[in-house]
Length: 123
Image (cartoon, rainbow, N blue to C red; front, side, top):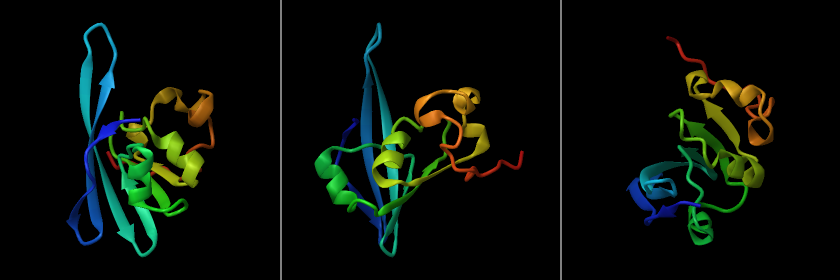
């Protein structure tokens, strides 16, 4: 779980939460993170998802309300498995953001995890 600040309303149906991930390495490292939450009717879409505290998760929406998760950066998938398992959210990512081993690894990266919903780059 990521330490995070308050969930801020930036537009009518768009909220933002900033967090920080602490990595224990030889030299401790802190990485800032941010998640955008978009509400359309009763469904939520998360961009670069962050698993929040229990109270933070209650604040963004009821179970089942998170329908889509979008990864727009190659190393922004840390918490996707949580949203897939707990909300059955559809995960979207640009093909260039997937790691080559993702088609062969066990766990959340196993084949079929993406449900053939990958967006394609036009590069």
